[in-house]
View 1 (cartoon, rainbow, N blue to C red):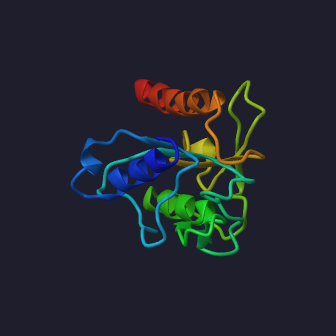
View 2 (cartoon, rainbow, N blue to C red):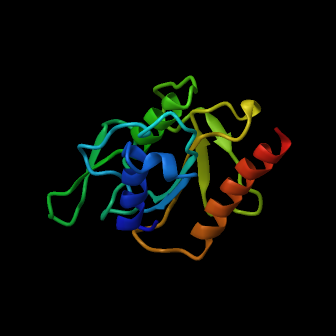
Length: 163
């Protein structure tokens, strides 16, 4: 989902009623509202990739220094900081997390230099369950957002086929 669609994707995966139906989430420029710093809605594995613009002031991803961010548009909207959301998500999937921003494991998406991605999950254990990708962009849909999300899910699909 993009922007509010990304917020909705997080909400669906966090809600116990819909989480069992979710195979994974890809959120571009969308984070949960400030009162939704929670993990997944059930015990199933739900891989999540977030793609955020560091110059986005509509839904700012934050810098990890605070659990919440605030829109610069004077609307009073507060969001969960991306670092903290991905930290909680990784922890819920059994990853050992730290407090340093960005997360300690680099996650490379072949052929995509527009973003720098990091995860709290050790990639030697398989595809990470939570990835925080950042670009220098403002709030806007980019043609490469979908490609990055699909490559992330292809990594998970390939791992499932091997098991």
